[in-house]
Amino acid sequence: MAPSPTVDQATYWNDEGGRRWVANIERVERMLQPLSQRLLEAAAASPGERVIDVGCGGGVTSAALAQAVGAQGAVLGLDVSAVILDVARQRYGNVANLKFVLGDAANMPLSSKAYDLIASRFGVMFFPDPTAAFHHLRAALAPRGRLVFICWRALEQNPWMAIPTQAAFEVLPRPEPPAPHAPGPFAFADAERLRGLLESAGFSAIEITAVDESVALGSLDEAVQQMIRMGPAAAAFTAADKATQNEVVAAVERGLAPFVSAGRIRLQSATWLVQALTA
Ligand SMILES: C[S@@+](CC[C@H](N)C(=O)[O-])C[C@H]1O[C@@H](n2cnc3c(N)ncnc32)[C@H](O)[C@@H]1O
Image 1: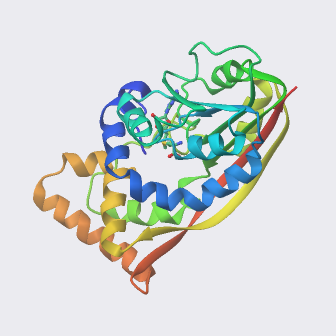
Image 2 (image 1 turned 90 degrees about the horizontal axis):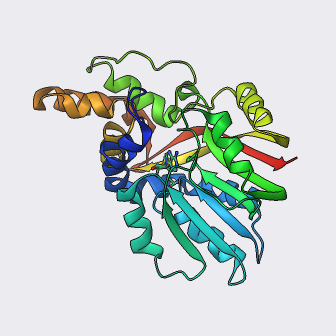
């Protein structure tokens, strides 16, 4: 979930990023479920529509979209990670109107003006040149085609991630902060910049809506395991020796413990729900 800005995205998602995502996929997808709901409602896919799911991951959103468009419609799940797409294919490979294709959504060949909707749940923040990537995606949309995606606001506005990350970096060496707007989960935190780059890519009727939802991190132990393996501290945690790792686990447990209620943790998340039309 937190690729290093110096690592090529395709490499990251086919290597450690992909392995981490797959290892935690059930837990993370459970956590993202209420946010999917918001995305799918806004996307409002209807029978017969042709849809692309960008950075489709394990395919759960693609499958929901495939159900919404029905037998007359079709969904194309795109992902740059072979290891993650394997999971999508294992799960949904037999869904007749759903196809998964490996490729970089920023520049892979796509039929021109062929799609009614491009949707994405946290799959569009990793483009090195977002304006060029959205320009490329827009060319695949039919006139009045919709772009609908959900992305994270700033780390500090996401306590579900900020609290365990802060705790982990009490023990681990803090890496250099990424360059502002570097590709990564928080690349679109600045809504005005995001609006500007979508405008530059040729989109109109751009709506960027704040969504504040609490998300379920499971038990304390589950939350700790997820956050040390997937957050901004994951790479430093993996590189640390066993004694340091034990200290990190203890620090993250202490950080999250005040939020346990009836054995479960819920914390706030902050995202942008983004909607736009081809001009
Ligand atoms: C945070 S995960 C989200 C996965 C999925 N949408 C979900 O919500 O479960 C980001 C996904 O985007 C994919 N991705 C990153 N950059 C991409 C690109 N340029 N083209 C296609 N997929 C990309 C990654 O491989 C990964 O599967």
